[in-house]
Length: 188
Length: 334
Image (cartoon, rainbow over the protein chains, first blue to last red):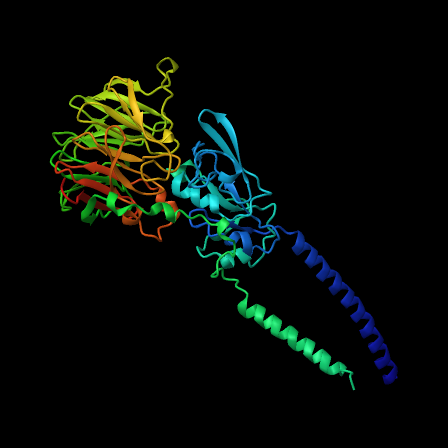
């Protein structure tokens, strides 16, 4: 009698254990999927007031093409004919390719009205080397600056560029305000 | 014989993999200390343009002193050679040798000028404030409007000229603040193409001969105007050479010497130069290597230094990076 009871308990133990394992597996899978679909609360971004345009953004991102790109703050751009972010420092005013500052030709120049020109970043060509950023900061209004583009960034927990940033310019920003943009107020 | 034991082979592979992994951990720079690894083509280098022929530098720095301001913005020199520096919502007054001589609670000042009787004219964010020599507020002129950005004031016996970078025009007032007119609007009939002001630098000064000199920075030139609004002539060209004006928009500031020569200062390549009234380079007061430390951040190079000349013909320079006054005098006193 006692032997039969022990046999039943073992069977029940294994049966219930199997169900328990199934439920635990389903719970784990659900938790994993929920974690994957839940949006992060913060994102990586570059604080333009700290960025020194060192070029590390171009090579330290885990992506093949860096998630960092140059952006243009049109409100503070001078729309200069002699744009220092567009032309080599020693160049005479000629917009031939040999005089372009950007090594990848990622800045396009469009005529607005004499003598004003608009400068746009061609994102697919920009590698975030920061060369134009430095030039615009030194001679111009600093309207060209680097930002993490969130349509590209995979938001790693430990951002490789943040670890390699010598200026501690990589900061976490709330997902509701994913960009740290320059404006007229910052420029004043 | 000739066969390798599988255990040894696996051991060797594991050892090689372990060494490779360890090397990657030890030598792979994740801190950025070794730099981006990009070639020279991707770096921005203007060092070659910072060199100036020493024979051209005919001034030397004789005095410097700290203003004590966190953000010194501009300066003016009074006829008695006292130095007025605006910044941090105040105007600090120093003797000609740097001794503190007073403070005016002025609010945020973009530009200032001192009259012969010590009256201070301060261009603020939206108005012009006039202070007595003791610092008491004498008058506030009417609101300049949303788009106005006052950047420079010049005085004559009876006129006040205010450069407005926001509207790219010069406002002409009498000493009581009555507006008399505007100078510099586009006028195709007179072939006046207007002022091109890409950044917040738009300086003006009245020369001893009565001409109104204006820095048309987007055109990289100095323009001489009559006080009635006729453009007389201009000089200046774009370039990094020492004779030219560099970057997109220079000179940021200038002052006129008693003999009519101009002393100009640029941003980007921060250099101070003396030109005759026809625009011929006479001398370099100080080049980038005298004025800026090599490790200065590029964003600080666009801070426009301010200039004035005192009765002893000394060039008073406001170093807006170090918030310091630096005084230059001719080496040979010629």
